[in-house]
Length: 588
Image (cartoon, rainbow, N blue to C red; front, side, top):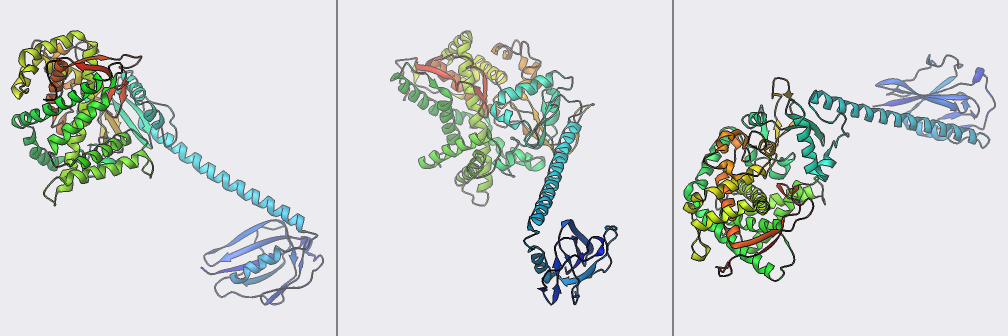
């Protein structure tokens, strides 16, 4: 854009006041004197004029020969915005000479420089203050819009009245997730709506306590309703094409292809593999504890290691080398840490490490698949099974130990039943038929899962506005958290009591309150491997209680819930363990 500049200079009252030596400016000359007010006028080809004024500067005598500009324009009329100023002479110069004109005016005589410097400083401060005021006003306006949008979405739903801008309540969520979700549950319980609201990292979230509302979400997984996301920022971690993000025919076809892996015949094969690995790890635990009987062991890490080997063996087979297994374990640890960290996808942060670890895990698992064309996709599906089998099972096994230690009468009945079906001294493995006979032990396993559902929340995102109830419509983009944990404490007889007999044939609460037992989900995304998970828990309970004597190292708050990311005892299940049957060699 071509720009010309017009320098309008006037003196108070129109009279010239003194003259300084002539100065050369391009081909024009100017004789500055240093007392009169001035104003600088810019005219551009796209509009104008644009002014800058406000302090004393020299009044110049006319240029001897004004310079015209071919691509600009000058006006010889003093703008009406300065009616009190006498019109002076106007000189036009092209923008190439503008800088030199400014240099000229920035070189006043020594007698006037303090006044000019003071004026310049005043102008600078004024402009800075105005800019700062504009910035703060804009920020305040944006923050106000954020609060208004949150309140508009929340409406009458219980939740915080005011939220911290952008980050919301993510700090309290990461710092103490148990307390955060307990507060959300209390708010939801206090309302007839059965839901509560909050705000996390620029996202409006909805906690769903009511069982029927949870079913409504689970049964409406489709593009224009709800999409399962697994984690509020799961797509970055799991990838866009993960199994949990599928719906419709594609999802149905994949589940149909997966189903043969969980038939009774397949499960019986897994039972032999699971038993072999459990026995191996029980032997390792008792060997280690025998040399240090005074110290309890954190069972969480021991069980996690055992489950990781079990999952790798069952779902991957012998295709992972020892080195690959070691790297796999480290990457999986990074993944777990990232799930519970701030979602900052930058180098050095746990979330970034988790995302990169998942990519390596999928690549490693994909390398175990012979079909190179689809191996990365299959690698991702295998990772889904590992994630589900690994963390959820670890949670259930830990709670089984903790709850059996609390309820010795239940432990006694389990040992009595297992002893009548399987004898460790026989050297024979537990078979699928044996597992089906262990009715009470399975009831214990089911009650463990009901009482302490491993994955307490199943986050979905609303793909469109969805009418959840007569009085509330979920806004598009909302992350909803159906709580399967809260559903487990609705409907059942004395739901706060650990009572395996509720699953007995005489009471059949698993049928009466089937809709409240949501630990494995519901609808099209219901857990396809739930029978595998239940068998694994029954098998572990049977073997652990038969072969191991154990006692919790009880401390204040040891049985409180901790998110890691599935739930486990706060103390990581500290136990003293020793070999229960001295005549049985667990290494065999």
